[in-house]
Image (cartoon, rainbow, N blue to C red; front, side, top):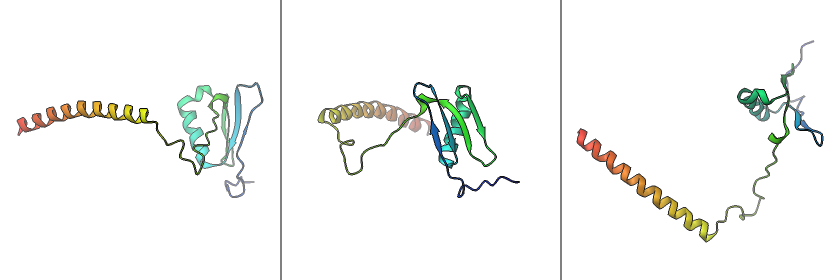
Length: 118
């Protein structure tokens, strides 16, 4: 019997770990998470306990628990995450002024070199 790789029928995604353990086990059928896990495995395969691609196309892996992160982002309807203090704004302006000054000197040197070549 052939195993069907139809994720309309198989759409389970799961991450499990026990309190006190240092590794988590996951099973993904979602392409976004599968691709991310494949990339991590290519880069850091030695840190995985195991990594399997099942016949149905899902991926099962055991990876360090410290990699598991929940990031809800900014709460909808609030702009508190985007507000800057006056000190932060002033610091940013000072950094940009220094950057522009250094970059403008470089641009002048570059332009003068181009003119000399012509």
